[in-house]
Length: 284
Image (cartoon, rainbow, N blue to C red; front, top):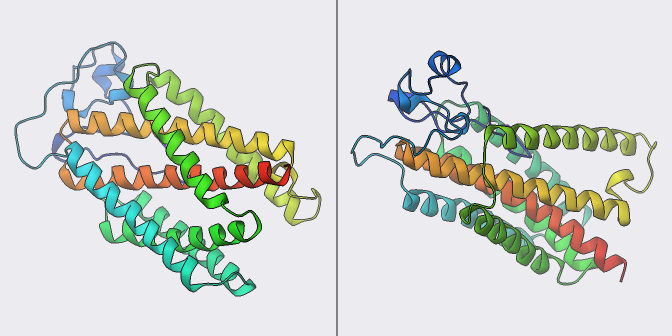
């Protein structure tokens, strides 16, 4: 089962040295009906429906812990915040700053794609992505704030509310991340991205006016809400990967992958929340 992110497809935790494998296909033994026929540490946790608790990882000090994930996520998100704050403070709203925002977004995209296809996590790539993504967010946040005062602050609160509620629902067991859940969600997410790409092309060629499906009207609000719900869905996949990575003894350095995935998803939710706040403010 391959997990993904609404913005980029990314690798999950590695299977190096027999550690837990995420984003991998089940082994032959599992396909024959025995989930533990092969090395249990190499099985896909998403595929083990109803098997029970995962096996304990071998005792060692070089395994990913929740503290590792929290620290690296804080560093990555902090880099995004610093980049955004500097861009907000140093780049006044103008055509030049808008161009810098687009350039920063493209660089962030390239760095994220490179990391997605690397076999091992690279803190330099992840933090580089975070820095350029922060510049992009800082510029567009300032642009939104200049027209809809307070929109970025409301978007931050909205992002925190969505992520907090998703974590609460996940930890309470109201959502179970199974293979079926992931497949359906990923199919919906891919369909959404295809539709958004087509809409972008139609807008670029003047076929669809006022942003098409991304307009600042009721339809645009509906699309924004769907996008935020998809972001929450990907958060549940992130939480599941982190839980299973710790349980299966993923290498400590792969906590950077957890931080990377969480950052991608939270940025997605923030941008969509920012648009949604602007739409509702425009209709007041």
